[in-house]
Image 1 (cartoon, helix red, strand yellow):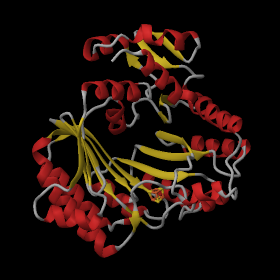
Image 2 (cartoon, protein in one colour):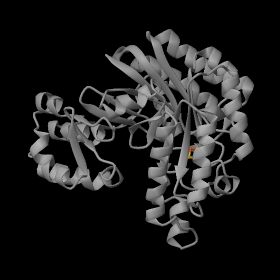
Image 3 (tube, helix red, strand yellow):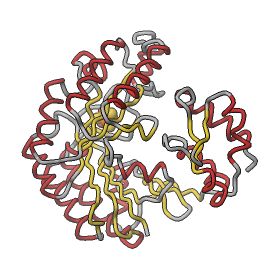
Image 4 (cartoon, protein in one colour):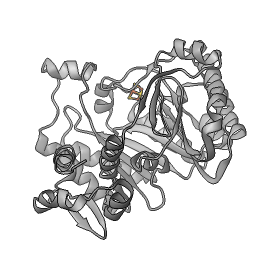
Length: 375
Ligand code: SF4
């Protein structure tokens, strides 16, 4: 039985210039109908679920949706599923879309983890990224979720922003440390094809900082968050002890999950599925008591092994060598020998993991490892 539930709320106040997630402009009528539909879809998926360990309401920007609709959704989840006594219920909240009242209402409804899309503490960078909020909004949002007695707050930060300097990034890192959230995600800004950022970069209007500066930014985050009591537990994620994101850990452990909502992915049995990302079609189909699945792929044994390695190496703990031998039937050590000699991988305590040098070229390391493995 599946113990992890994801709900996708695709609405955003405005599209950020770098965003290639599935999100659409907020429309109140559509959003209200959408939540009703998710509640219906939840009934269709109930059977596959066991006692839930985590619920993650992500987007998009879930907090663009009216408070009462979100509470209705949370209540429905609580009525429909058994929840583990220490269930982690996360909602993504963007500054500018949540105040003290909303944070308190969501916390009272059962949300016990807020993931706040900060991205930067610098107004110039926020504006360039197309974010709707300012530095002041960030501070107000963190204060609002703290006011709501939420003891588990995560923030997202971005580095490698055009025009960002090493000093600018140091300032963002210091601000994060000072605010002391329980969890920090730090991602490099990636210009995805089709986004306005990508177009502007192709035209030479925007330029990312040089590669060596971006590397320095990443290493600085690892060192500074590390000395401030955060455990670097995944390539881009840092948590105070006991505050690692349990929902995302399930993805990296290749655990199964149910995804509800337009564009949501599910991993059930040996199939990965994706709901349609056409919101109107999603609503029409689910109304007829059917699932709105657009794609359903059976994962072969070979793909399962590849996924396990790819996801497992994202965790700084690494891959359990014996576990891989017994569960997946693969012998990692001979395949990793050359990469270990190049100091891109290391093997200790029964685990194979990326080194500090290997972590920044993880895609290349993983590709090389796959080539050496006989699957
Ligand atoms: S708030 Fe997040 S999901 Fe919405 S447009 Fe910006 S990056 Fe995309």
